[in-house]
Length: 287
Ligand code: PLP
Image 1 (cartoon, rainbow, N blue to C red):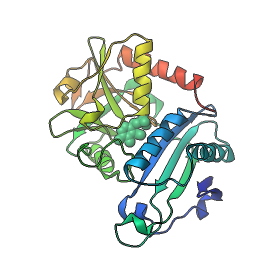
Image 2 (image 1 turned 135 degrees about the vertical axis):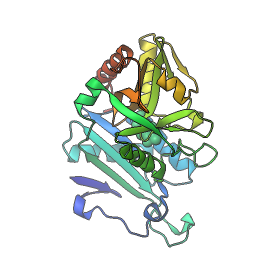
Image 3 (image 1 turned 90 degrees about the vertical axis):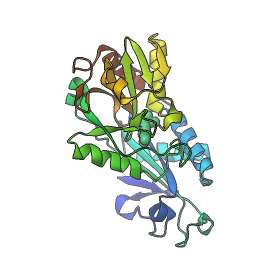
């Protein structure tokens, strides 16, 4: 593997940053996860817009223009001969002193890793996922806004661990008002009486790019979709439930907190959306 580090492609063993990097010391930085399908980077521009917006929000100067960043990503994918895989872009505040003040960090560190992707096994796409809801919440928009894909992902790490403690692979967060927000690294949708619902992002969810892609697909298929707050109860009594994310794509959920969703099998609308999503990833992309 060749890793992009500050303008150079270096072997993995040389892809190192300082322990004084504020990304390491304070989680001060941002990241993106992007997919490559059949040699095409999926919705690269949308991911880069989100990256630069995250940077702006935390007053982080990315030392590359938007186009230079796009080129660095394409170059990294090419250097690793990847036809399909996953790209991780990380921009950390850079090396500074031990104080919190980022003004001691003169230059951000920029890293691009392109690798193969570890998906859930196909079996789970065919038969669906069992999940739970967990005590850990996402940050409220009043704290660290969940739209910032910051290197502070401890909430999501805890969600994953709480899921594992319950013997499942993924979990949903619920906000202080009792509204369902999202998974550790995925957005959530439910289907009830042929209507599709997803929580509005202001409740405390990332504005996922796969989420938006699914909303586009719903429009194309003329499936009514609504961004409406819903509770755990609404999930339990939904006809269908599924998660969306760059890594997971669209994955059916068949059980939540021990309640079977619908008839306990991936629902027809979920399957239709998964099929349609896989079709669009093959059709579009920037390069
Ligand atoms: N929610 C969180 C907390 C995430 O980290 C991610 C992953 O990026 C998502 C949702 C899904 O977003 P996307 O579809 O852009 O990957």
